Image (tube, rainbow, N blue to C red):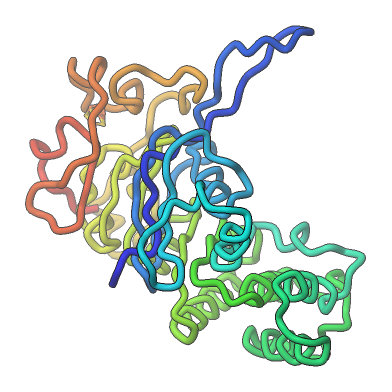
Length: 335
Ligand code: SF4
């Protein structure tokens, strides 16, 4: 499939202030040079520990945060890829309709004093989608598409369970007919028993509506279930990106290897040893020189302390890229 979104060298730095005069003394490098692409109709998983920059990257994509630098190339209505950070106001408005976000917490993402109808009606009105009666019909259809009854539109958020609320949030993201949805930990606030229902619903909707997802999560089993390809982030950068099966069968980066070793797998558990990473994630204000993972890497060499590895194609694998000096010299692992 053709590329729908290409992220080129995106950075998001937040200034750190000190003293009464608010002097800038440094920057939190939340996202620090991420390049990725997403094909139309696929799900790209984004994983990493908290603070690795995955949520900030997601917010940059829907323009809830303005990137400090870089390009976001989007194929609007099948045309050429265009940088959405340099569009006119009207063009930006049109593109915003195409890229939506579903947040982690269904409890805080719905306005408690508005009925579901009002919450849906606002974006529909802003994007001039029909008369009031047509909008009512659209909302009824959307609720039914997430297996909720149409008359629920007159209820308030507190009248629904967590799983129902997240289905409502998904329906609301769909109401202005987006092409790409950034799903930011969409099931992590839900009971495990409800998670599968919501994930399956998202998969069904993706097929029916030809949606493209960027699926952000820290739960690797959930990401594996949902994603065609997965990008692993560490301290604001992508360290490995590969097709889901390739990443899970043979991770090439020591950080991915450690993350995957913590995923329970009943079939392999007896042969598998859990890799415990030493120390904490370093500060994103002053990340380590060279490979950012080197203070925690058991395979660290001299070169790792001075030279930052770049993302390059892994030997012997299609569509598998890794940023590690030793990636090609290490045996292919089977986690
Ligand atoms: Fe470890 Fe070196 Fe690879 Fe970084 S570049 S992950 S420190 S082996």
